[in-house]
Image 1: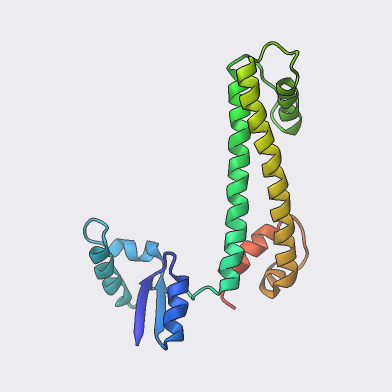
Image 2 (image 1 turned 90 degrees about the vertical axis):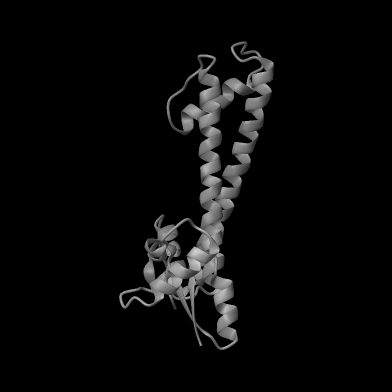
Length: 187
């Protein structure tokens, strides 16, 4: 029996249906969307999937393995931490700029700003603001440690994954790109 599913967080169910003997076809949501005729709801989505699956030029994607999905979670979590780090840096810079305290862009500039926050004798920063920015600075340090930990996990995953090594045989900073590609490639 053939089953067509829009590929949006459905790899688990695809594997379960395949274990029951079904032939599952996953379609990317972007390929199904043009066939939705009215507002998005389950019935309209089901109708669009039925329409899309009958098209001869429809492309299907393979079901991801749990290992591939684990790798995607690894990369997405690291990416989330980097976005949070950027947000914390921007908040520190913006809050201090409100008090006329600025520094050069980059690591040295940020360290200079954090030095101002850590210096209780610097009266340009009110104590309430200092405690808030100290909390952001502490969060920033924690995020940097977590990102480094995820970098190590990605490297370890790369060294153990044949697809990733085939896509990027020589480790460099491009290992993240090779790993991300490996998670999207069928075996």
